[in-house]
Amino acid sequence: MAGVTDYTFRRLIKRRGGVGLVVSEFISVEGLTRGNPKSKRQMRFDEDERPYAVQIFGGQPERMAMGAEMAEEVGADILDVNCGCPAPKVVKNGGGSGLLREPERLETILKEIKRTISIPLTLKLRTGFTDSTINVVDVAKMAEQCGVEHIQVHGRTREQGYKGLANWELIGQVKEAVSVPVSGNGDITSLEYGMKRWSETGVDGILIGRGAMQNPWIFRQFADVLAGREPYQPDLAEKKSVLLEFFELCLEEMPELVALGKMKQLAGQFTKGLVGGAQFRQTLYHSHSADEILDNISIYFASLESRDTFGDGIVEADDLVIESCDAFKESSSVVAA
Ligand SMILES: Cc1cc2nc3c(=O)[nH]c(=O)nc-3n(C[C@H](O)[C@H](O)[C@H](O)COP(=O)(O)O)c2cc1C
Picture 1: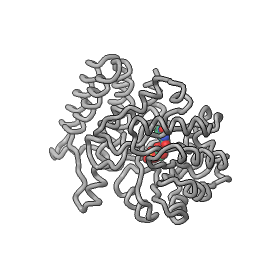
Picture 2: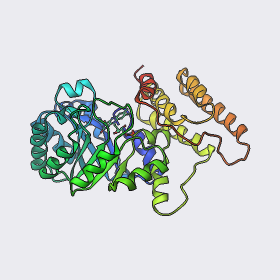
Picture 3: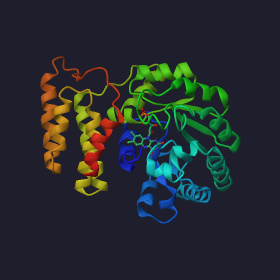
Picture 4: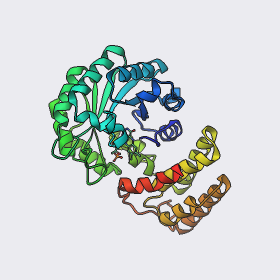
């Protein structure tokens, strides 16, 4: 996720356990192949993160192949092509979900990349550009012919943005239509929903985006369920310490002001569904220094502990309802500021 799954966030998630694969933020091949330091920084990863996929985006076949080669050179295990980003700036330049409107161009890109790299090539798709031009099954078949080794489908069209629910029926159709592995994606924030969609569609795996910000233990919990164990439940102390750990990781990597923004972004999602979470988010958004943030976290968790009547660390609403992208923007705009 752009602006989210950077080096710091990926490490935080990886340390919680159960993650099969982490993916970089999407990286512009225009930036990467022109030596933009931000794009190069975005490719950076830790050995502990392996297997690690770099996702690139762009619309020009030669640039995409060059970008793919650079990802292979830095040691990525997998190269993923973004064919889902709905942002107008990306689409206008022929990249992201714009490629769904031009399958021939996508085909050229995939073939060029295949000729250039030897690590596995994967593709992240939306279901179509508009709701009336859904073509994910055809695009997936074409991609398979080009040598794509794994297809991930976010079950929404570009037109849908993040509205409504992901269409898992279409994801199931893709699984039926190709023989390479297919992973499904969209709206998984609970074990029940994820396991239901997984088994209904018969996909080979699932991808979790926003749910990982709300619950960094979600991968471990899935791994537990798959292994027949009770899903791990972090207590309040652990929830508090994960926020502190994230802040510490951010401070190691970036200036305090940027770290504050990152912290507000994560805490905004992390506290969804927690008692008093809305009020806590307000105090965080108005914190202007590391000390102030740390104080506010301590005060908030102390208040939760005092309400934890059963001493089991559970004082939250059970159901973490998926938030719309607008809610996300609300928190990410704080980062931009
Ligand atoms: C802030 C944000 C940034 C995203 N950036 C990317 C991206 O760079 N590449 C990508 O393939 N998908 C990106 N996505 C889409 C997610 O990977 C995922 O497909 C979508 O959010 C649906 O899954 P979820 O309900 O588990 O979040 C982004 C989503 C969000 C909310």
